Length: 414
Image 1 (tube, helix red, strand yellow):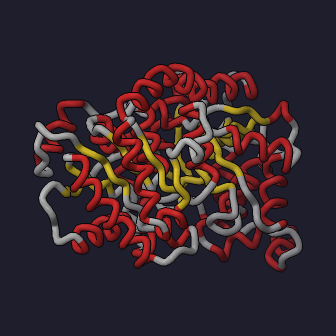
Image 2 (cartoon, one colour; image 1 turned 60 degrees about the vertical axis):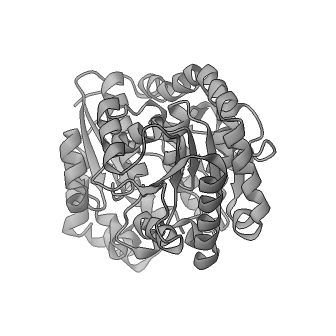
């Protein structure tokens, strides 16, 4: 059986890497002997990551805007396509699609209005479905859609899917009650990255020593996002100042060291966590106890580092998931449905009301919101115990993605 994973952007975003790695492993469990390939916007950037995982790469031409319009009904290029056929690069995608038995969209939160229209992530899926290949979306956060065209773009593809799974209750409710998708096509699961295998504990211990961390002192992992201010239309300088403010308080009041986690190293400065981490260190003049996790690390590596920490404060969702799935007390600074939804499902509470999540705008504007982070530090053992008791069920929900998929499409092969 041959499976094509789609909607794969740059894996220098370790959240994308976590989804690719965990789904490739899960698909091979569900379909023993399956050959898994990746359709990606940037095979060159992803080469080192995909080589580590033994996954062949193919180029997604819809990463280029000039090709997307061929999939927009009524557009000039759509009419041209119907009259003369696809240009060669898109015809090649059809030819490639016909060699696969299944296409799986990797997940995350692209199916929303947070990053503009989801149509750019759906164009390849439509063309693949046109070739008779079953399509599934696994472990998605979906919505909210703030424009009708975004909403209709998603619904149009969703109706063609054999299966859609969502990774938190909020998305499940939205899809069923707002988008009115049929209940037999949609299932509540958990993010597949809950099943991601960490790198070895020995490696993580050695790496943390190399950062200059004192093994005798506790460590707080702080995921500083270079993109969150832009996604939430917030002031970047104010966000940077809030991060430095919180970091100073963590260092002063907990006795812990702080390890900055640059989980996304994007080619765009506006979404590069290394720049955000560097800004915090410069603002604070490189204080003792503040360290940076620097290296060519995979999502497995970062998960191993986070697992050795005593608490996680995350502005990136897959850093939070690394902490949650390792049984580490976790706090989220969020801007979308995913943070509140996933944290609520993991702890079995309303995570905002319980002080486990703060919206970005409140974190920036109100220094008093830092008290919630300090409360999580004080409750870290209790929260870790809660996670440990709930993790077997959460991981079973993540594995459910693959049992549902196998049931939905059966053991197909060409």
